[in-house]
Image (tube, rainbow, N blue to C red; front, top):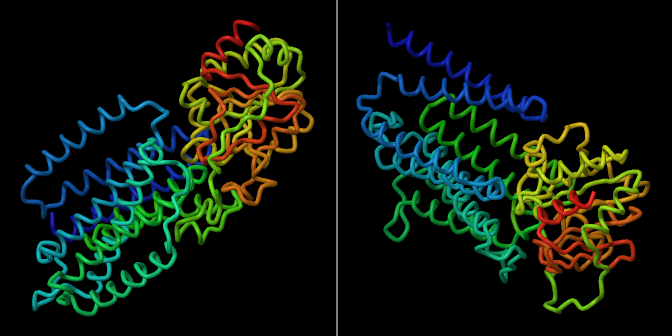
Length: 472
């Protein structure tokens, strides 16, 4: 087989993989077709990996085999051990790995450009390749450090409240201008150095720093958008390195991930009344607000029991369930499904209301409800069900705090002000399952707790739902 034939077959295989990746994204757009979407994506990835490994330019497979074994073992152990509640931080961790991979590949290409076929007759790196590797490295470094901060916030290692640094906008702007200027300088002269260090290392170092600074000021209520945004960044980093490696599959895959992540971020920003530009620049979510004033809440609340909740819902005509991160932590989705089945047998109409940022990543609640085999036609997004609360007898809130807080509509000093929330306070009765009176992830007290039509059910979510089932 000639070199041209091998090249043509490789291009064809990458094209097939790219089509499968597009079909995967299309399938993942709906819960009903998500299983097929995942299958398309896996098949496409197998084709891309096998095609890459079949490249005749590979002279040794030892290190590749070692990397595959180590990475595969880590992946399998992670998949087996990580619970669904930790999925958001796992996604953030995976994004960081994609970013670091882009940085390492760019560094390898810079140190040994001849091995990547990106040098001219004089042994200098092509100008186009310098642009590609520097952009890929910069975006990869931002993705890595930003994902590390996102992981720390999601995992509870850092506060979920916005951390406002003095002069952050000026610092970020200065760093951004410096990185762009250095990329231009690096593209024009690959031998230029500052303080004895090549520009490439300055670009990577400053990008690591700005990645930290962009994510630190973002509050926990906006973390799902951060995860989506970092997903987009990781895609663009992969696409940039794809050009350096002259790998069409990596270019296509990176572009798909980058563009789809950007579109998802834009959609979520519109749903949260956030500025898309402020997302890209970082520091949105509590821009000029204070997350709580440190005062201890002493207002009285109406407290109920599982028996009270069971009686109220059993005699209701309609119930809307609002799941949140508290349900995920308690792994209460299966018990919730059992409770709903009992209510349906009693003739109660039940539906689910999902906020775009409920949980810690896009679609978090949808995934958990699907795991419990909740019918898709009973699950509604905010814009489709918000008008129904005023005609609903009971709103059953299970661990959803910030996304049900009426302060988002009235308190201009709140970090979540302006974010569309579920109008649960308009229901006849609000049953709120929560461990205690602590503030939500954004550090804001929920005004819903103190409404006359709200009954607080203080308990672990799963334990409370189990007790309600028994009472029913």
